[in-house]
Length: 378
Image 1: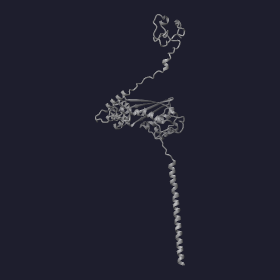
Image 2 (image 1 turned 90 degrees about the vertical axis):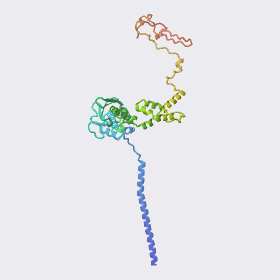
Image 3 (image 1 turned 180 degrees about the vertical axis):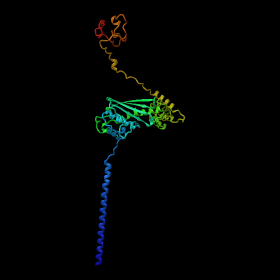
Image 4 (image 1 turned 135 degrees about the horizontal axis):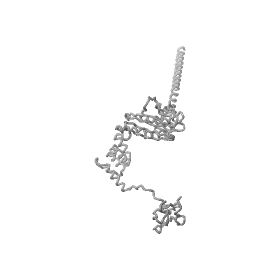
């Protein structure tokens, strides 16, 4: 009996221990799952709920209602007092984006140069560029409502000066909320302002300075290597290639490449002759095929549009009355029989040799009577 009781107690204790162990394992697993599930769900929800925010770094990337952080800092520190001030702050930032560095006193980041604005509404800024050597650019702007006239003078040496002028309509780039504290709401169409100021002011100044100092071209099509330039020319039509070849010797050399004209010939000519030798003059071959195509399909020359049919059928209307004489003043008015009547004098009948056509009668309203020669002209 004692042995059976001990066996029963041992089995009961094992079951209890196994039950507690399973309960502990289940509780621990449920606890770990409860701890991990919220983290995973929170992370996934955060990634899914928060969309990626794109902030423009340049003015050319900003849409309406947006402004780069650099423009926001300049706008807050410049103490804008007029729309012209706002445009000059944006113009200063665009000059910095093209690589110009302001000259004068030491500047802190996000501040306008000292003395950039005077009391008379005149703005003065001075820049230098690392690609322009020791040349200086002086920018002077004057407000002439509704325009802001910007004059830039490039001083390369003591004898070489280059001037550029730009006129901006202030209302095109500044909104009515310019006195506010938000540059994104104060400016509009920053893309257009960036394109105009860089293409018409900043980049031409750099190119003029490097040309005056006999330095190679720094940007643009002339700065590309021949391989990339030929790839661009292959995408153009023949008229554009020919016009580009007349710009400079560099483009003329690139446009005379034999592989370029081989590509144009195989692209534009129907059923081209591909069995040609390697020493074929593809440019002359393209000219020959172009002449043959022009003879088959002649190009209609540009001309004025034809007159409508009603202008031919309807007779010419009478001139305005009273008609003016051929000669005003002089001996003709005093003695009309002394001098011959001029051809363009509308007095009298105009006879038409063609009998089938209606006669054009330009007579005076007074029944054909001559005008009173003593009466003065009013």
